[in-house]
Image (cartoon, rainbow, N blue to C red; front, side, top):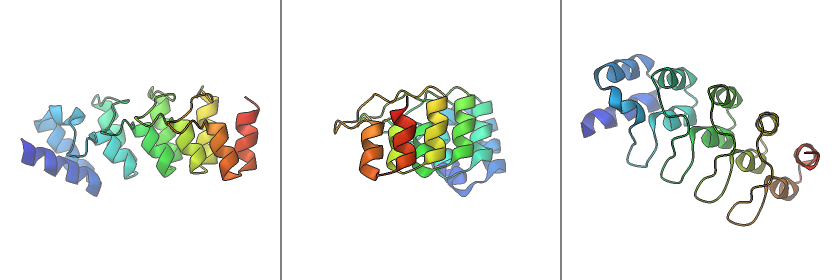
Length: 159
């Protein structure tokens, strides 16, 4: 089973939809398995910007808010990477915009810290809480101020 799981995760990294689909058909429990770093197939697919595989995994019942070894969800990963289309899809499918990781960071904190303005706006319009502070005591607005990004400061200051 371990070899099958490793091959499955490699197929996801490679973006090979047909192989991923075939492996799920044979071993459906792979959908919510974790690799040696604690990532789920959905987290890995979204991290590599493989929307086609992420869509398949969601259709097959992948846990949308499952966390990796650091407490990050798929939505947190795409906020970090800047994949707006996948963020929209995950939110549409019910991803929690206010989930927090082991360091207290939220999707909004990631989006702001990395100057992902489009994603930050999406998160705010979808009900992201601007108040939570990460383990260093900084909120999304604090991060916007540290980054010196007027658009993000205005977005968060007017909430």
